[in-house]
Image (cartoon, rainbow, N blue to C red; front, side, top):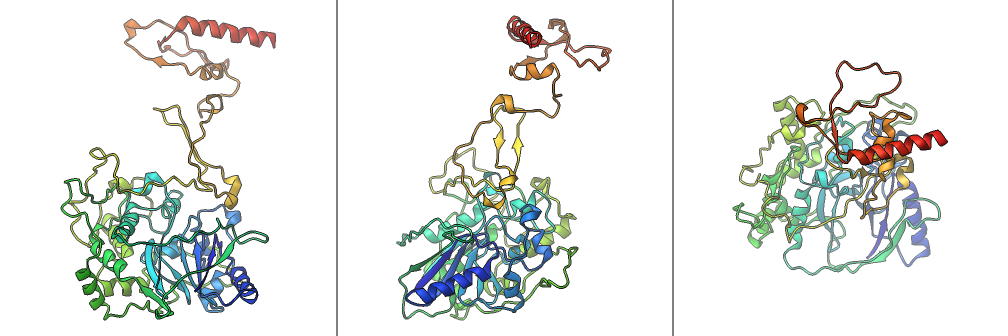
Length: 474
């Protein structure tokens, strides 16, 4: 079986399918399957563009909408996962996966399917430690924070995939190039020969083990921003093994009437982009997708979006999640109280946990200096745009001389003191040495000066004197 693997698509479906057609003409035969590894950008309209966490200059409609509207159809079965540059509101409609267009299938937050006997699994998003243990609490319209956290990987998805991987099954790993964006003269596509079962059907199938795990872990669904640890064998949880048993898989198979075929039930859920009638003010709506409704009803699990809407109604939320830790879950999937226990203080390292390096995001141009630490957290600036795709395993420390406080005034005498990293401690008034504070020439004399005590005061006095001399010499 010939499988094509593409890197970041960025909505350039026309170019990718044209390249596949060229490869077929030059190669030994047609391509049977296309796998896209993130940044697919299933953008249907102008509202979807506003849900992409990229600067406005990178928000381009591209060509996916033509496949969504039915104007075009994907010439080869396409399966993809989400990245950090996605129309998040569209993909959020399909948390368990589904068709975003005819012949184009999204694996969901995490998912496993089969094609011609080959098992295909994946997880969407990128890893960020501060959101990893939270629930899936975001929904449109997103704010500047949730438009990014929406695509951060959560521990529940990793946990579910681990249940499928811990049965001792052997797997073959296929190596291929680190693929580039879909640009001229770039290695953005590779065609592989994969062994398959000739007797297996040539349509997309559900994986019975994965469906069984989804059903078993349904009561672990969390739609809040609270931190949440997965069950483990540490004496605090009555159940921690959610792997699929033969009996459980038989029950799920009976629910599906022994039919694992993924139904071709794509339906249009949002207005499609019309280049002749642009709608820049299109409203963002939190939608329930009929594909997800059908899937959840058939399997007997909870639609995450239904739980989110219920939580929104019961708690009168307005779409802004600055303080999500105070929001309690309203999931109807089962009693989770026995699992909602933070065990990080008891077990700092879980030997079964998958450890990931943090992937820095293109547009999270944040530099934070905490009051209790002199080490700032640095992330790449947005001027690199979508061309930035590196993963940093070591954090560069910003020199102290480059840290600028918002309270500092350029050219003022306090600038020199800031460079010395001096420690100032306040004590009782009777134990303090009266020390006049420096001030700007245009400031008035305060009614009462604060009394402070410096450590190594003599040394600082000497340094101040040297600075004064330098200024005079200049």
